[in-house]
Image 1 (cartoon, rainbow, N blue to C red):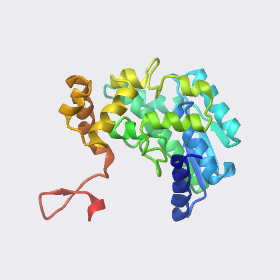
Image 2: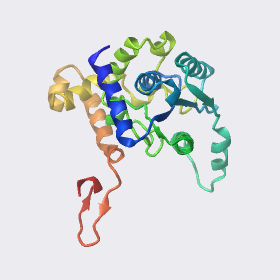
Image 3: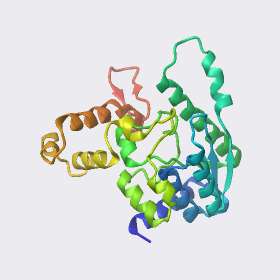
Image 4: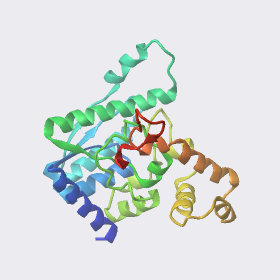
Length: 260
């Protein structure tokens, strides 16, 4: 067992112990991130304490749903399939214009509501599947897939998640498929982000792990446009990474409630 794997499993056990909880629920999509988290949860908590919810939409592929079911069955965990179209459909009647992005975010928020509804009924914690690359870029829906109690792989770059997936023997079809949130038919993460995860990991780790300047990253072979695009996305989505700021009634500054 690798050091990374040991550390994450230990961290999951400790967080649940401190929280006074024994059960976990997560959304299983058929992708690499949720498959890895499901395996880690079973290793930390035991299969009887892990539940996976498969929450497809009309844009979800049959292949991803089949892969998600295969992972759940292989792990021996309780799992439920609940299509969410019936929950999203009423929103089409709202009296304002909607966009592809707002509809996509709605799906993520409805999934979060269902996950927390299940967690409430079972005294469980909702476990997220976001990785460090996604978190740094803000590539998640605020109060959607970002609404979780714990992020076991939130400290791993996408490349590190892939390495861990190979160690955990995640099925080859999941390892090889293009990452997608299936926000709409044909959507892929890398097409939407405009860069491959290999490029994103390299730029982000250079900027934030090695503290390289944008100029230094450009000298390493990336274009100015690529580096500026990554930095712009990080800056634009910083609000997703912190609790809502509180404005003090007796002053003009804004502060983070966690810094009181």
